[in-house]
Image (cartoon, rainbow, N blue to C red; front, top):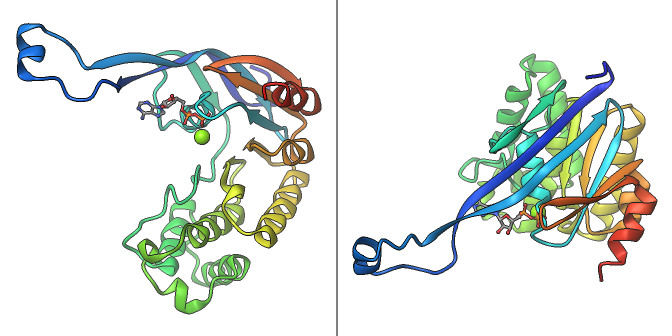
Length: 244
Ligand SMILES: Nc1ncnc2c1ncn2[C@@H]1O[C@H](COP(=O)(O)OP(=O)(O)O)[C@@H](O)[C@H]1O
Ligand SMILES: [Mg+2]
């Protein structure tokens, strides 16, 4: 592995047990020994190498395996075969609200996640809380409410603001931009662009080719759990558009 490699995915396959036939009767289960669960391959022999400071886009139809690949890279899903080597730290918010505690208020979530990232110094922490709440544009009365009472747009604002304020090496963005309103999306894109120019590594899943081309140097196209194309993001976005 080269010293500039931050993520290396080698021959990774992932399968899930899925039940798509509903509930079997006891007779089917015991006498006929039918198993309602089928083992389904979601990712097949994935090989990806990402260098420090590189931004990689992941495009593909719904269900092609993009989120599963991100979760596997982040260590949330264990691959069935293959290895994943990561030489850096992650901002832990993968998708809208993942990582947020619904029973806690917005402010409590910010504090909790800041503590997880290692900001314990009180003055720095207050500064970080102020920055995050300002970026989110959520009113303080909203930030004092439990997150379970938020609209999906508010959850996206909070999740995004926390993950963008994070100083980890790798930023993972999984379609979250689709939720906020246009003003907030534009602001997030600007911020992601700024983070890219700071030399951070970004994994970016989006259905908007223009955004992928703006943020990512390279991209991969996933189809039914296979990487069918890999290369400069402009070429891969063309391949993606040809799917429809
Ligand atoms: N926890 C799970 N258990 C069973 N099947 C899953 C699970 N998570 C995802 N899948 C299946 O894996 C496939 C890929 O899903 P996903 O990675 O979310 O796709 P994408 O992000 O590209 O839309 C889908 O067929 C989905 O139903
Ligand atoms: Mg997804």
